[in-house]
Amino acid sequence: MNMKLDDLRQGLAGVWDSVTEGWHRLRASAADALTAFRPSERNPLPQAGEVDDADYLPAARWAMLAGNVFEDERDIVVRLEIPGMEKEDFRIEVEDGLLTVSGEKRFERERGEGRYRVFECAYGAFHRSVPLPASVDAARGRARYRNGILRIDLPKRIPSRPKGTSIRIG
Amino acid sequence: MTSNDIAKQESARGETAAMLPPVDVVEDDSGITLYADLPGVPKDKLNVRVEADALTIEAEVSLPLAQGMEASYAEVQLPRYRRTFTLGQELDSDKAVAEFRNGVLRLHIPKAAHARPRRIEVQVG
Image (tube, rainbow over all chains, first blue to last red; front, side, top):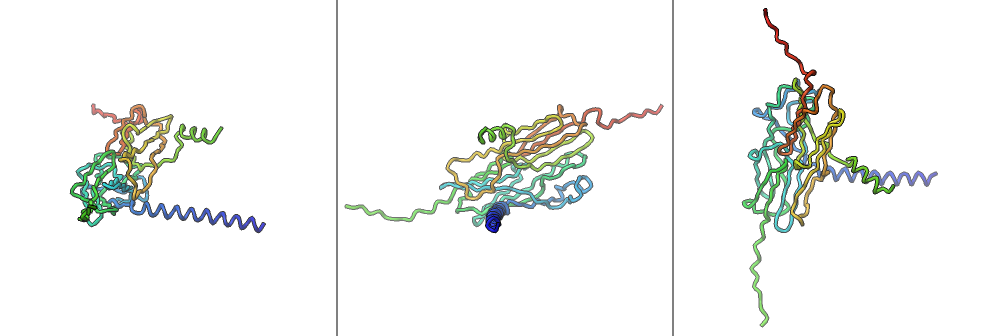
């Protein structure tokens, strides 16, 4: 019986390790995605009485704003999931190896005078910074907004070639 | 039956792992309007259907990227969204209208005529 208990303990330790490892990985990969959306005066959220959720407050909300960074030898491509935006409402900046995307997701007030049975989406001003894995030429960057995804293509800055002199064998 | 067959059956029933999209649901006298955030879904990969009183939203994320690109940082997500809602009897899903723009689905389902509050004109004789 003692051996069985030992086996069990080892088995449990294995499960526990993989659970905590998975959690760490999730936290490491999702921590940056958690983004605050702040309502503003010109973009107010429904009042507490208009929403069927006792815990609802028309204050800042947190939402996942998932991002992905891809690269090859020439370009860095950053994709951010931000549905429901108008492309003119984005502000994209690159400074000190950091790409910052900010904007305001508008809450359309003409959604009617009804009651909110469910209110989960986030609205308001947000900003998200993504560290870039290499130096880029931001002036040649391009951005597109399609299907709720902002894609930014940034060409890498090619380090100026060391001026070597080749010596020919005569 | 091999495990492969089971996997095929599961995918045929759409039982693969999927993300729950966040939604807003507003109800007024005319019906309900549902908004769902579905970033990355092209129009042809969005499937909204009503069976009996169950409304199901299912969508596939498409990730077009140049070949040979390597992910140096990724907040990995599942490539699929799915969420099911139960509709009240008073809704007329045959008259539902859907729009999809910038990754946001807007679905309006009107209330059946008999369920709408009626305004009765009072005439003073």
